[in-house]
Length: 178
Image 1 (cartoon, rainbow, N blue to C red):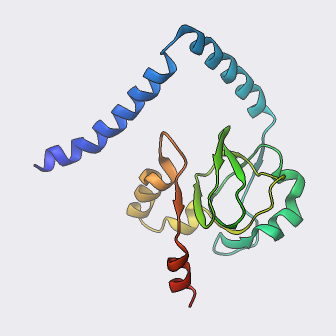
Image 2: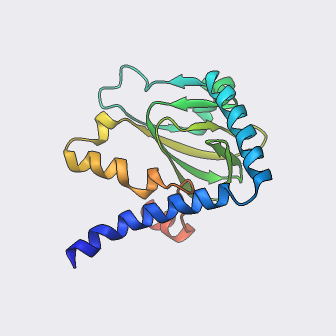
């Protein structure tokens, strides 16, 4: 029974990988288009700016309002960029489209978006929205081997098919912030 439990997650990952391959190879025309997209993406990645975590914060952890983030880094936020740290975005108001690894994600009201470190992203600068960002590094989160294992394997930051987005009901928000 323990053996079958340990095999299931591996089977799940393998199945997802096979699904990705199957989708990518359905039609020859799609393969050619996929190769063109890969070439475009590889050209874009050559010019994508990487950002390290802010120096001077002893815990390598920060909570920042989107308004302040955009005030300080508007030009950087609207261009493709990579962050060398993990991010959890709480979109409190508005319905922007956030692009992660060249995939547009329609954001819902009161939702959390989990962004793995080194993901390429672009913020929506045409739609008004409000929220906060939690930023942290491996050094902040990973105090033990189990912490590292969790961060590297949790579906919140490592889903092969999508970016994790969790919608939060207004009643939960009210309960937490009362």
